Amino acid sequence: MEMVTIDTLGAMRRRGYGLFGWCTACGSASRYWADVRAGRTPQRSIFDIDIAVLIRERGESSSVVGMVPARCPRCGSLNTETRITAPAKVRQ
Image 1 (cartoon, rainbow, N blue to C red):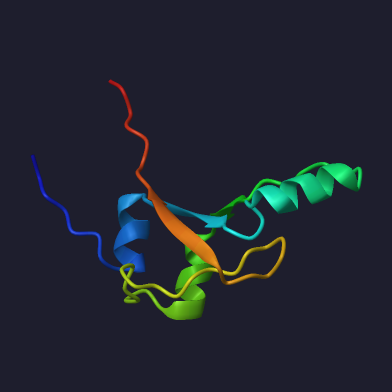
Image 2: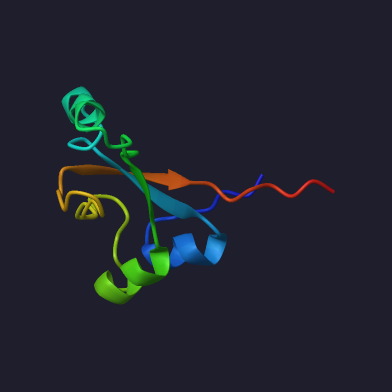
């Protein structure tokens, strides 16, 4: 088994990894019920992060560990968590 180090945004893009974010403000129970009471459809607190845009903003050699949080597209909060998604395996 080959060990691969994915430590920069450029390495993530080359290997096919992705990113998604989770907003703690939008994911709170109080936000959910506020939407329900106001008659709005509760929005998801999970959002995709475009690695190409992130590389244009921060650079290809930007470290993944300790990365500045991505802004939530719904509420604009920086109180978000970032998660890495692995590339899909292709069955042969």
